[in-house]
Image (cartoon, rainbow, N blue to C red; front, side):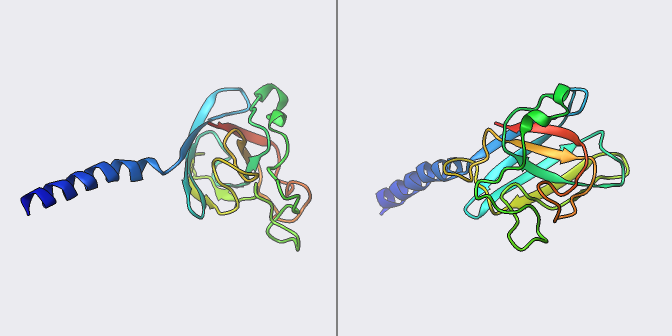
Length: 169
């Protein structure tokens, strides 16, 4: 009997770390329009999508800002972060939650920046995953715009200038 309990305990000890390793994660470091680091994001894949936790400084205080996944993992501040391309849209859907043929995979809800100019948020995107397949976002970019997304204008929601960009690694 004691031998059975010890074997079961060992099996649980071996299985537990393996289960913890099944969760895919990624990191991203935001850079502002001057090319300075101004925030981070941690992304965790779940069975239903990707949970993103971010903190970004130097944003328009007390304002709503657009937050999207962009198609190219390049954040060149000298191009105004245009190097990140357009929104990630592997299914060629329309942009926005308020359109009949949207949203696309890169669409996410507007986020409120605190009075201190810091955005602290947890955002869940059920239309993407971190790795594998056409909806994978590792190697893509996270983008924060200077204005809010209107959820209907094509192709990007009339969200204003790109303020902070981060490559998902």
